[in-house]
Length: 587
Image (cartoon, rainbow, N blue to C red):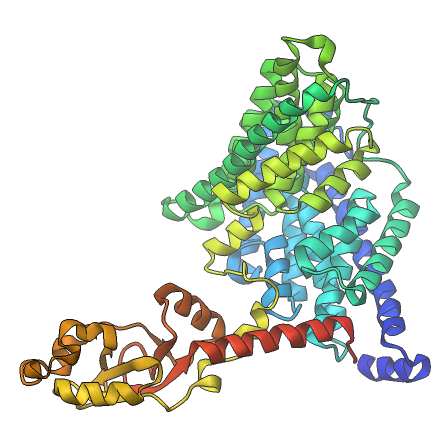
């Protein structure tokens, strides 16, 4: 029904971009509404668990009864564990990593049930005090709503991904009051390109999401930041070193989270009870350090205004890494953007205090270093340096430290990518066995199978074939490669001219050797059901231009061969088709 209306509207206006722009307004409004409802539900749940509705969690938590402060995260964790076990598909809350996977591999398709379920889990997690962020769940919810609306339309693959990006951009803009950052986060992290066909609808969705957010919450920055100036260009080496420190902090956060999740799978405690146990630990720690509860905006604001000493800054940074990793690894729902901002704020403040000691007259103040580190740690964690820089600027309204933030962000991002992983999300996907580092053309490659390109021009020899026969067969074999098979046509080896070695042109040895004597055993192969992504990876691993195709890895019955040139030709055609679709698509 919805598709018929879209087709009628398209015939009326006669332009796909106008149609997409109109749809972007609807998606932007829906995603922003979801983000607003998500934030309001957090406030309601926070009141039920902690007894107050305020982002000044640390201040109010310090006055709570000790037993309530301990029990609130534990009870919340128990409810989440039961919900995941009996209601949530897969038993685990989803997040931004699933949005990236959907865009790259699933043509922008996401489950609305999982989206709503993840929102419930994340709102409950933050409301009961779990040390997680709220922005990632808002992005996931916005993307799920956009995907649900997109399924009602007959969209191309590129248009479906663009609509997913519209939901993401609107959710980011509504969550942060940051429309520019919303646009670039969607393009940089989810879409993977900046073509006008995607850029225009995403901008529209982000702007519309910002308007709704400002109407509801007002036009206020997330933090009140004092005015900072770079005192001296001699500080730039200090900014670069700060980027290295921030990379270490980001890698620490990701590795500890992965370690906690791995250990959780080995514990004798049932998976559904682990959030309650983690919540109990968080509650006990919060008795002394209530700053680690929830999103942590109040503590970040205090750090930006230089309200903490060195020991407190270092202590809060370490505790936030541990508590966030514990909560996410144990099964609480939530994001990592706010925790990475929190860790960056504390790391930057501590670094600024230390770096300012030798030459205080050259320092911009440790509040400036706090702001710079917030951008560097979050950029390295999210794997989104451009959009993170913009988010920091729009969150704080401070554009005076632009160059310093850029330097630290680049250093931290490069080190994290080289020594650990492109992002927390890529790390999550890799641990699930999902690899999308090949770009957003991976979906097209996975849609093509080996049997689509397989040929029958290979040359086979039996295991008992003599040396003279091998020479004759090699002359007509593609890529000068023979496949050795037994009586049941099972692949047992391969032979190339170089494998013959010294006997290649020595006819006196013809009766001494057979094919099985000269063959390379356990040759590389592809299964007929494999996709071209695996084929490309396999060709790069073995550095050969021709691979055998078998019916299955168990039987190894030879049924054809695959040429690397054909795979690369199909790969290039997929890229050309995708680019054409992105720049000139039709409904």
